[in-house]
Length: 101
Image (cartoon, rainbow, N blue to C red; front, side, top):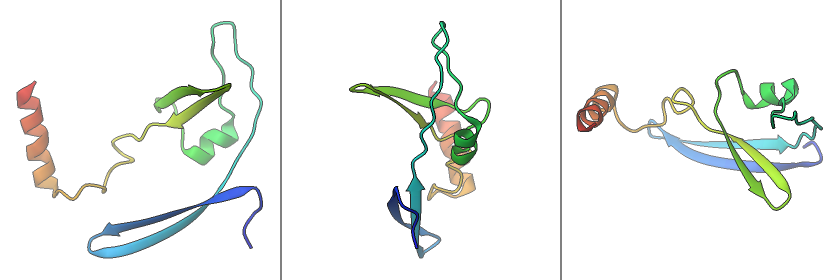
């Protein structure tokens, strides 16, 4: 039985020639926070843990109507393993990009 109040995210992806299907039930969490006079706020611990937001994590902040939307920006570590390049190819690509700078 699925929890109520959530939505389902289906993800199909290939990895090492194998098709993976992942179904994730997303539950929304609503918390009220205060904004300081300097425009700062604290993301509640429960939400930080759920989304893996740690000190130094980057967030994209956008406004939509009367809403403020914060989205976690994937780090290099979050993206590890998502490339189709081998390790050697990836390092060669990085070296080439560094030479262009």
